[in-house]
Length: 295
Image 1 (tube, rainbow, N blue to C red):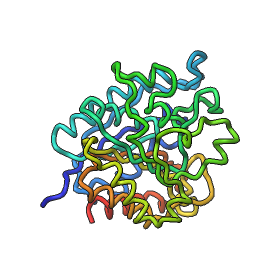
Image 2: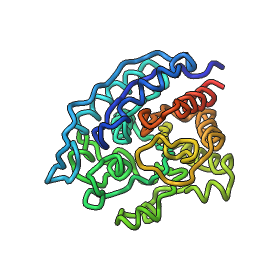
Image 3: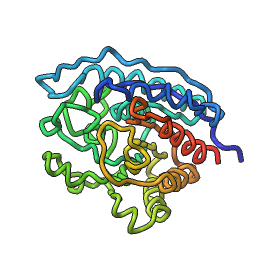
Image 4: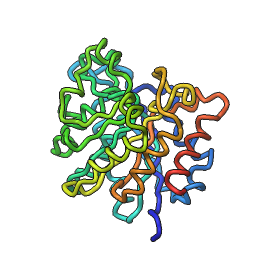
């Protein structure tokens, strides 16, 4: 049976972080040959509104209305790809682009999320030091936060806790120091870095995929934040942490999701090409995605 047809959507938004490089992620991966390696159609670029460096006094977020508006526009683009029977590969940008991807699915029914990220991204606005939605997009997606970014098109939440698996997270101590709300106190399933290592990547991925593939869900989305990778092989991120998963561990995990037949799309975020001085990180990401999506 033929595999999925891929369509790449460029989503170069830094609205949830700061415009210091993540917005060039699509250009870097496309220049490194991602579209050719996937045999993918280039389905266009969703340009974000202008960045506002002022923290909104009401929501304590940067660019809350911009993120809300951008999420709707990105959801339209993702929906068009899904309507064409293709598998969207959305190249961010920062992690706030996840909201638009999930809105596209929420319009269609009940879906899950496999969240591969070194951080839980579960902050509340008054605990996030800079008001960056890229540190709280999972909280926002599960309905926690200001209405402007949690109630999109009247839909709330975009995801229920029990439809999420967080995989490879390693920032628990840091999040506690900063006063983040605890993902551990929710119904979100968590397989942190220690859990992946205890089980082994293949077994851990198998557990996550099996759970998200249960029949009450029509499928699930894949969120890949570059900082889930070991800092030694992925230093080109703005908020670095020691440790992380290897290329092979992430590859095994994504491949398990893809071969399940239940993964409906993928976004890539946070890789900052301006910190990738020798191009090795961009090359590694392209190799990873090509190996996983078109083995």
